[in-house]
Amino acid sequence: MTQQKVLVREAIADAGVDLLRERFDVDVDFDSPLEDIVGLYDAIVVRSATKLTAEVIERAVRLKVIGRAGVGVDNVDVEAATRRGIVVANAPESTVISAAEHTIGLLVALARNIPQAHAALKQGRWERKSYGGVELAGKTLGVLGFGRIGQQVARRALGLGMRVVAYDPYVAAERFRELGVERVETPEDVYDVAEFITLHLPLTDETRQSIDADAFARMRAGVRLVNAARGQLVDEAALLGALQSGKVAGAALDVFSSEPYSGPLLELDSVVVTPHLAASTDEAQDRAGVIVAEQVAAALEGGLVSNAVNIPAIGAEDMEVLGPYVPLAAKLGRLALELAGGRADEIVITAYGGIAEYDTRLLTVAALQGAFQGRADRPVNYVNAPLIARERGIDVREERSQSARDYTNLLRVEVRTGEESTRVAGTTIGSENRPWLVRALGFDLDLELDPLLVLFRYDDVPGVIGRVGSLFGDAGVNIANMTVSRSRRGGKALMALSVDTRPPAELVARIRAVGFDDARVIEL
Image (cartoon, rainbow, N blue to C red):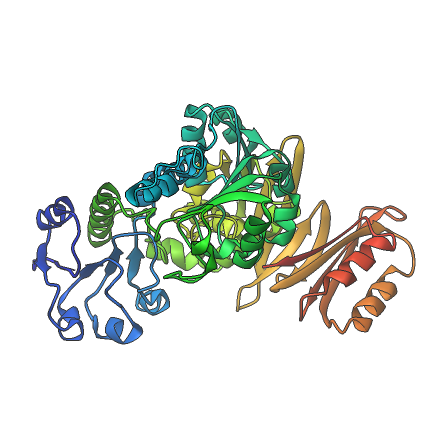
């Protein structure tokens, strides 16, 4: 049997190359035209400089796996690779320690004015009074985003004698307790008490430029801000104004909304800056090389590719039966966590009927992938979703029953938080296996899981359906489908709609104000 061939296109740790050479035929070639040689290889290892475009991937007729020795995969056309059945793997854990340590370095430099004092002394100025700084011990550090890096920063800050409070609605309370960190309910709770704030949030539509003028207005006078996460989290014009007014005493920044950065923040003596160095340590780069080599080896040898960013390895037989239920599981996972307010201590996925006879772990990870998508500090896929659950202290259980009562196959996702439980259930309908919602919040339903859903709970009294139709019509929002269920006559009812466009916030607020118990817009 011909040995599989691996192309190492950019420099990685020698240990990573050696690991690959023990198992495969490896070429280290940085210079040959990639389009001419890529078709010869079963795997390719890159860093950030090599661009694996759709055109290059089209020529990679043998390629089974792309290994990116680092975190981001912006230089890889993941969609084109996925269409070709090529696994794309990266090394997301490689930079966690480096990023956390750099954050602490910025924190200390900010508190003690180290870069400013260094620059002054280099210029011949001995300015002890100007750059005395403040101690970190006894001060309160607010951590916004309590994922892998945020947790490592908190550990180190506690070691410096700081009090640490953190906000992350998607991490279980037990994880905060384990680390000795105070959990708060909102970012504003952090702003109220923190003397230093460090950012470790994922970049989403909700978090983009969320550290804005309003946020700075809510913070304590003299607060100091550290950002070694993502530049787009901060409204840089608002930060400039807050620094100039003195509301923010200082900022330490490793990332910017546009890089390389050459804007007005560089002119302020109260700002400490580094040029996106958080992940740039020898150890992180070496670790990335070894991790990605392990991922490439696993992909070529049929093992578990734990850092795949696009597709997991799925058995053909299981995929044939369970495949139609994968998108259903993802939608139910997202719906359940949304209805639970984004918080979970435990997630239980139960398969009923014929699908219970198969390896339903695929459906479990699909449900987790749907639940955490957009709520994590990295892209969520079927392989890393269980790891994200563990990091957040969320227990995941899988149950199966061959009895499905009224359905051939049924899938249920339950989110438990404290004493509260939120359940949703669905199945697939027709030859196209359309995902269908059959139960939510204790009500039986009959509705296709379209991309935009609106759910209302209200008193079961006459006139409600007409009132909802009028309100949506007046707002120009078309209702595609509607189903209504009630607990008992004269009791509570649940109305579920699928709509063509997202209802404006004013419409939702108006509905809540006219007697509905709850109104939720959920994007699947």
